[in-house]
Image 1 (tube, protein in one colour):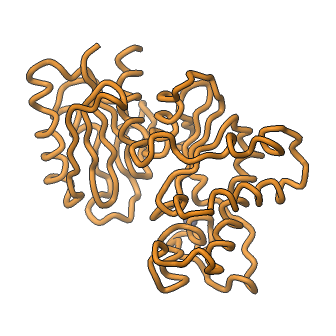
Image 2 (image 1 turned 60 degrees about the vertical axis):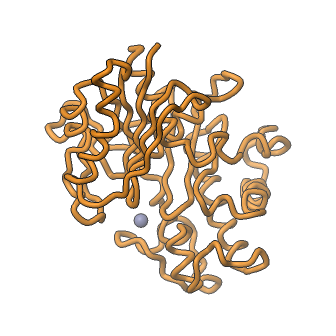
Length: 298
Ligand SMILES: [Zn+2]
Protein backbone atom coordinates (compact mmCIF):
# COMPACT_ATOMS: atom_id res chain seq x y z
CA UNK A 1 0.00 0.00 0.00
CA UNK A 2 3.01 2.30 0.39
CA UNK A 3 3.56 5.23 2.67
CA UNK A 4 1.61 8.43 3.16
CA UNK A 5 2.55 11.83 4.49
CA UNK A 6 0.70 14.02 6.95
CA UNK A 7 1.37 17.70 7.58
CA UNK A 8 -0.33 19.61 10.37
CA UNK A 9 0.44 23.28 9.81
CA UNK A 10 0.05 25.50 12.83
CA UNK A 11 0.96 28.98 13.97
CA UNK A 12 4.04 27.81 15.87
CA UNK A 13 5.06 24.56 14.15
CA UNK A 14 4.48 22.25 11.21
CA UNK A 15 4.21 18.61 12.34
CA UNK A 16 5.24 16.27 9.52
CA UNK A 17 4.77 12.49 9.62
CA UNK A 18 5.30 9.57 7.28
CA UNK A 19 3.62 6.22 7.79
CA UNK A 20 0.70 4.01 6.92
CA UNK A 21 -1.38 4.09 10.13
CA UNK A 22 -1.19 5.44 13.71
CA UNK A 23 0.85 2.42 14.85
CA UNK A 24 3.27 2.64 11.94
CA UNK A 25 4.81 6.10 11.78
CA UNK A 26 8.33 5.69 10.42
CA UNK A 27 9.47 9.33 10.43
CA UNK A 28 8.33 12.47 12.17
CA UNK A 29 9.63 16.04 12.34
CA UNK A 30 8.51 19.30 13.93
CA UNK A 31 9.45 22.33 11.86
CA UNK A 32 9.08 25.75 13.50
CA UNK A 33 6.71 28.10 11.66
CA UNK A 34 8.91 31.01 10.57
CA UNK A 35 8.39 32.67 7.19
CA UNK A 36 6.57 30.71 4.46
CA UNK A 37 9.62 30.26 2.15
CA UNK A 38 11.83 28.81 4.88
CA UNK A 39 9.12 26.66 6.50
CA UNK A 40 7.74 25.19 3.26
CA UNK A 41 11.29 24.50 1.98
CA UNK A 42 12.00 22.43 5.13
CA UNK A 43 8.70 20.55 4.77
CA UNK A 44 9.57 19.62 1.17
CA UNK A 45 13.09 18.55 2.22
CA UNK A 46 11.63 16.25 4.88
CA UNK A 47 9.37 14.39 2.43
CA UNK A 48 11.54 14.50 -0.70
CA UNK A 49 13.76 11.43 -0.04
CA UNK A 50 10.61 9.30 0.25
CA UNK A 51 9.27 10.75 -3.00
CA UNK A 52 12.58 10.04 -4.76
CA UNK A 53 12.57 6.43 -3.51
CA UNK A 54 8.95 6.15 -4.75
CA UNK A 55 7.73 5.04 -1.31
CA UNK A 56 5.44 8.02 -0.72
CA UNK A 57 2.07 7.78 -2.49
CA UNK A 58 0.34 10.97 -1.39
CA UNK A 59 0.43 13.70 1.26
CA UNK A 60 -2.34 15.35 3.27
CA UNK A 61 -2.22 18.88 4.68
CA UNK A 62 -4.20 19.86 7.78
CA UNK A 63 -3.88 23.63 7.69
CA UNK A 64 -4.57 26.53 9.97
CA UNK A 65 -6.87 28.97 8.30
CA UNK A 66 -9.03 30.40 7.02
CA UNK A 67 -8.16 28.65 3.74
CA UNK A 68 -9.64 28.47 0.24
CA UNK A 69 -11.18 25.02 -0.29
CA UNK A 70 -13.03 25.70 -3.53
CA UNK A 71 -11.32 23.56 -6.21
CA UNK A 72 -12.66 25.90 -8.93
CA UNK A 73 -11.09 28.98 -7.33
CA UNK A 74 -7.80 30.43 -8.67
CA UNK A 75 -6.65 30.64 -5.04
CA UNK A 76 -7.56 27.03 -4.13
CA UNK A 77 -5.24 25.83 -1.37
CA UNK A 78 -4.24 29.31 -0.24
CA UNK A 79 -4.20 30.46 3.37
CA UNK A 80 -6.39 33.55 3.07
CA UNK A 81 -7.02 36.06 5.86
CA UNK A 82 -4.85 34.77 8.71
CA UNK A 83 -3.58 37.26 11.29
CA UNK A 84 -0.33 35.21 11.29
CA UNK A 85 2.45 37.55 10.14
CA UNK A 86 3.65 36.82 6.57
CA UNK A 87 1.19 33.99 5.93
CA UNK A 88 -1.67 35.91 4.35
CA UNK A 89 -2.42 34.75 0.76
CA UNK A 90 0.21 32.00 0.82
CA UNK A 91 -0.27 29.16 -1.69
CA UNK A 92 0.45 26.35 0.78
CA UNK A 93 -1.15 23.54 -1.23
CA UNK A 94 0.38 24.62 -4.56
CA UNK A 95 3.91 25.05 -3.24
CA UNK A 96 3.92 21.63 -1.59
CA UNK A 97 2.28 19.98 -4.61
CA UNK A 98 4.84 21.51 -7.00
CA UNK A 99 7.69 20.69 -4.62
CA UNK A 100 6.80 17.01 -4.19
CA UNK A 101 4.92 16.25 -7.45
CA UNK A 102 2.61 13.68 -5.83
CA UNK A 103 -1.14 13.96 -5.04
CA UNK A 104 -1.88 16.33 -2.15
CA UNK A 105 -5.07 16.42 -0.04
CA UNK A 106 -5.87 19.72 1.64
CA UNK A 107 -8.29 20.74 4.40
CA UNK A 108 -8.54 22.70 7.62
CA UNK A 109 -6.68 21.39 10.67
CA UNK A 110 -9.95 20.74 12.47
CA UNK A 111 -11.64 19.00 9.53
CA UNK A 112 -8.53 16.81 9.23
CA UNK A 113 -8.63 16.04 12.95
CA UNK A 114 -12.33 15.13 12.69
CA UNK A 115 -11.59 12.94 9.66
CA UNK A 116 -8.70 11.23 11.47
CA UNK A 117 -10.63 10.55 14.67
CA UNK A 118 -13.42 9.00 12.58
CA UNK A 119 -11.12 7.12 10.14
CA UNK A 120 -8.78 5.59 12.72
CA UNK A 121 -11.44 4.42 15.19
CA UNK A 122 -10.69 0.98 16.64
CA UNK A 123 -14.23 -0.17 15.87
CA UNK A 124 -15.00 0.95 12.32
CA UNK A 125 -18.44 2.40 13.01
CA UNK A 126 -20.13 4.84 10.68
CA UNK A 127 -20.76 7.83 12.91
CA UNK A 128 -22.22 10.49 10.70
CA UNK A 129 -22.21 13.43 11.21
CA UNK A 130 -19.08 13.30 13.34
CA UNK A 131 -17.76 16.37 15.09
CA UNK A 132 -14.40 17.47 16.48
CA UNK A 133 -14.05 20.62 18.57
CA UNK A 134 -10.66 21.84 19.71
CA UNK A 135 -10.28 24.23 22.61
CA UNK A 136 -6.64 25.27 22.71
CA UNK A 137 -4.90 28.51 21.82
CA UNK A 138 -7.89 29.08 19.53
CA UNK A 139 -11.19 27.25 19.08
CA UNK A 140 -12.14 25.36 15.95
CA UNK A 141 -14.70 22.81 14.89
CA UNK A 142 -14.41 20.18 12.17
CA UNK A 143 -17.46 18.34 10.87
CA UNK A 144 -17.68 15.12 8.88
CA UNK A 145 -20.92 14.73 6.91
CA UNK A 146 -21.61 11.78 4.58
CA UNK A 147 -18.07 10.58 5.22
CA UNK A 148 -16.37 13.79 4.06
CA UNK A 149 -15.30 17.03 5.74
CA UNK A 150 -18.05 19.62 5.45
CA UNK A 151 -17.24 22.47 3.07
CA UNK A 152 -19.53 25.16 1.76
CA UNK A 153 -19.17 28.81 1.00
CA UNK A 154 -15.71 28.37 2.56
CA UNK A 155 -15.79 26.00 5.54
CA UNK A 156 -17.58 26.01 8.88
CA UNK A 157 -16.14 28.50 11.37
CA UNK A 158 -18.10 27.53 14.44
CA UNK A 159 -15.22 28.53 16.70
CA UNK A 160 -16.49 32.07 16.16
CA UNK A 161 -20.19 31.61 16.89
CA UNK A 162 -21.77 34.17 19.21
CA UNK A 163 -22.72 32.60 22.53
CA UNK A 164 -24.63 34.00 25.52
CA UNK A 165 -22.32 36.28 27.50
CA UNK A 166 -23.40 37.35 30.98
CA UNK A 167 -21.51 40.64 31.37
CA UNK A 168 -22.21 40.83 35.12
CA UNK A 169 -20.70 37.46 35.81
CA UNK A 170 -17.95 37.85 33.21
CA UNK A 171 -17.12 41.50 32.42
CA UNK A 172 -14.17 40.42 30.24
CA UNK A 173 -14.83 41.75 26.71
CA UNK A 174 -13.22 38.82 24.88
CA UNK A 175 -10.14 38.72 22.65
CA UNK A 176 -11.38 38.00 19.12
CA UNK A 177 -10.07 40.78 16.83
CA UNK A 178 -13.22 40.44 14.71
CA UNK A 179 -16.02 39.78 17.22
CA UNK A 180 -14.72 40.43 20.73
CA UNK A 181 -16.87 38.04 22.75
CA UNK A 182 -17.52 35.21 20.29
CA UNK A 183 -16.82 31.64 21.50
CA UNK A 184 -13.10 31.87 20.70
CA UNK A 185 -13.03 35.38 22.14
CA UNK A 186 -14.37 34.16 25.48
CA UNK A 187 -13.18 30.58 25.89
CA UNK A 188 -9.89 30.02 24.01
CA UNK A 189 -6.60 29.51 25.82
CA UNK A 190 -5.53 33.06 24.90
CA UNK A 191 -8.79 34.40 26.32
CA UNK A 192 -8.20 32.51 29.59
CA UNK A 193 -4.65 33.87 29.84
CA UNK A 194 -5.76 37.48 29.30
CA UNK A 195 -8.86 37.32 31.54
CA UNK A 196 -7.10 35.74 34.50
CA UNK A 197 -3.60 37.14 33.93
CA UNK A 198 -1.94 33.74 33.99
CA UNK A 199 -1.37 30.74 31.76
CA UNK A 200 -4.43 28.44 31.99
CA UNK A 201 -2.12 25.52 32.83
CA UNK A 202 -1.28 27.26 36.11
CA UNK A 203 -4.91 27.95 37.13
CA UNK A 204 -5.78 25.62 40.06
CA UNK A 205 -8.71 23.20 39.74
CA UNK A 206 -10.83 25.15 42.24
CA UNK A 207 -10.38 28.48 40.40
CA UNK A 208 -13.71 29.97 39.18
CA UNK A 209 -12.16 30.12 35.70
CA UNK A 210 -13.00 26.46 35.17
CA UNK A 211 -16.70 26.67 35.99
CA UNK A 212 -17.05 29.60 33.58
CA UNK A 213 -15.03 27.75 30.94
CA UNK A 214 -17.21 24.63 31.30
CA UNK A 215 -20.29 26.84 30.83
CA UNK A 216 -18.96 28.32 27.58
CA UNK A 217 -17.84 24.95 26.20
CA UNK A 218 -21.20 23.36 27.10
CA UNK A 219 -23.18 26.22 25.55
CA UNK A 220 -21.16 25.80 22.36
CA UNK A 221 -21.66 22.02 22.41
CA UNK A 222 -25.43 22.38 22.80
CA UNK A 223 -25.51 24.74 19.80
CA UNK A 224 -23.40 22.29 17.79
CA UNK A 225 -25.60 19.35 18.82
CA UNK A 226 -28.73 21.25 17.77
CA UNK A 227 -27.17 22.46 14.50
CA UNK A 228 -25.43 19.29 13.23
CA UNK A 229 -27.02 16.44 15.22
CA UNK A 230 -23.65 14.65 15.49
CA UNK A 231 -23.51 10.98 16.41
CA UNK A 232 -20.34 11.61 18.39
CA UNK A 233 -18.25 14.57 19.52
CA UNK A 234 -14.50 14.63 20.18
CA UNK A 235 -13.28 17.41 22.43
CA UNK A 236 -9.62 18.10 21.66
CA UNK A 237 -7.05 20.82 22.34
CA UNK A 238 -4.88 21.64 25.31
CA UNK A 239 -7.50 23.48 27.40
CA UNK A 240 -9.93 20.52 27.14
CA UNK A 241 -7.34 18.31 28.82
CA UNK A 242 -7.65 20.18 32.13
CA UNK A 243 -8.66 17.70 34.85
CA UNK A 244 -12.42 17.61 35.37
CA UNK A 245 -13.29 20.05 32.57
CA UNK A 246 -14.82 17.54 30.17
CA UNK A 247 -16.89 15.98 32.99
CA UNK A 248 -18.18 19.43 33.97
CA UNK A 249 -18.95 20.28 30.34
CA UNK A 250 -20.85 17.00 29.88
CA UNK A 251 -23.12 17.58 32.87
CA UNK A 252 -23.74 21.19 31.78
CA UNK A 253 -24.70 19.95 28.30
CA UNK A 254 -27.34 17.75 29.96
CA UNK A 255 -28.46 20.71 32.08
CA UNK A 256 -28.63 23.26 29.20
CA UNK A 257 -30.43 20.78 26.92
CA UNK A 258 -33.28 20.83 29.48
CA UNK A 259 -34.51 17.48 28.24
CA UNK A 260 -35.27 18.91 24.80
CA UNK A 261 -33.35 16.35 22.74
CA UNK A 262 -34.49 13.00 24.06
CA UNK A 263 -31.57 10.73 23.26
CA UNK A 264 -29.94 8.13 25.46
CA UNK A 265 -26.59 9.36 24.09
CA UNK A 266 -27.12 12.64 25.91
CA UNK A 267 -29.21 11.52 28.86
CA UNK A 268 -27.37 8.30 29.79
CA UNK A 269 -24.27 7.69 27.65
CA UNK A 270 -22.81 11.15 27.46
CA UNK A 271 -19.35 9.83 28.48
CA UNK A 272 -19.31 7.90 25.19
CA UNK A 273 -20.99 10.72 23.28
CA UNK A 274 -18.50 13.49 24.19
CA UNK A 275 -14.96 12.21 24.70
CA UNK A 276 -11.30 13.17 24.45
CA UNK A 277 -9.39 12.39 21.22
CA UNK A 278 -8.42 8.73 20.81
CA UNK A 279 -5.36 9.95 18.86
CA UNK A 280 -4.28 12.40 21.59
CA UNK A 281 -2.52 15.44 20.14
CA UNK A 282 -1.83 13.61 16.85
CA UNK A 283 -5.40 13.88 15.48
CA UNK A 284 -4.46 16.58 12.94
CA UNK A 285 -1.34 14.96 11.47
CA UNK A 286 -2.85 11.44 11.50
CA UNK A 287 -6.01 12.90 9.99
CA UNK A 288 -3.88 14.36 7.21
CA UNK A 289 -2.44 10.87 6.57
CA UNK A 290 -6.00 9.48 6.44
CA UNK A 291 -6.91 12.21 3.92
CA UNK A 292 -3.89 11.25 1.80
CA UNK A 293 -4.93 7.55 1.85
CA UNK A 294 -8.49 8.56 0.98
CA UNK A 295 -7.24 10.66 -1.95
CA UNK A 296 -5.10 7.79 -3.28
CA UNK A 297 -8.07 5.42 -3.11
CA UNK A 298 -10.35 7.74 -5.11
ZN1 LIG B 1 -14.51 35.66 16.65
